[in-house]
Amino acid sequence: MEYQLTENQIADYERDGFLSPIEVFNKHEITSLRTHFENFENHFGGIDKAASVRTDLHLLQNWAWSVINDTRIVNPISQVLGPNILLWSTQWFIKEPGDQKVVSFHQDANYWGLEPHDVVTAWLALSDASAETGPMSFVPGSHKEELYDHTNTFAENNLLSRGQEIKRTIDKDLCKIAPLRAGEMSLHNVRTIHSSGPNESKERRIGMVLRYCATHVRQTKGSDTAVLVSGQDNHHNFQLLDQPQQDFGEKETKIHLDATQKLSKIIMS
Image (tube, rainbow, N blue to C red; front, side, top):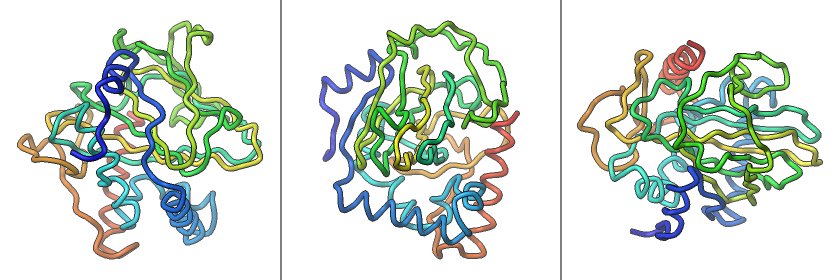
C-alpha cells in the first residue's frame, strides 16, 4: 500500500490520540485546491454567503470529492480504522487575518452521535497554519479518558456550532500545538480533547476537515448519510451517496441540501 504511516507513527497516534504533521499534497497541488475553494466562495458571492453552503462540499464539486478519496489521506486512515471506511462529513474551519475566532476545548464524540468511537478526523491545511494562526492544540492521551460533559456557551467568537466547552480542567502546559504547512494534515481521534486559538497573522488560515469512520459505526441520533471511500459496507448504517456528476447540478444541490440538513439536526440536537 502506498502512502503508509510508519509503525512509529501508528504507535504515536495510538498513544497520543493524534498525529501531526503528515505530508499529503505538494505546493502546486495545494495551491490548486485553495484556488478551487476560493472560486467556490466567489461563486456564492463571497466568504460570508458561501459559509452556509460549504459543509459537505464534496457532494457539490468534484475537486472536493477527489480530496476525500485521495489515497494519501484514505490509506493512513485505513491503517488506523481498518479497510472498510466511510467519509461521514466535511467541514471548514477558517480564520481570517487578525480573526479572534477560537475553538474551545472539546471532544467531538460528545455530540456527533457516532458509536462506537472508531472515528478519525483529518485536518488538511490549504494554507499555512503556523503557531501565529491559531493551529490545533491537543491534550495528549485524552482519547483514553472518559467522555466529559460540555457547556453550550454560544459564544460569538467560537467557531463550534454551540460554542461547546468541555467541563474539565485543562493544563495548557501539557497541551501540544500542531502547526501545519499548506499541504500537510493532522489526524485525531474522535475522543481526543482539542482546541485552537485566534489567528494573529496577516494571512487566512484555511482548514478542510474530513471526518472518517469505520463502516460498522452507526449514527444514534437519526437518519444520516456517508460516502464509501474504501472497502465494502456490509452494515448499511448510513445512506451512501455517489459522486456528483455535475458541479452545482440540480440533482446534486438537492442531495447536498438533504445531507446537510440531516447533519445539522444531528449536530444541534
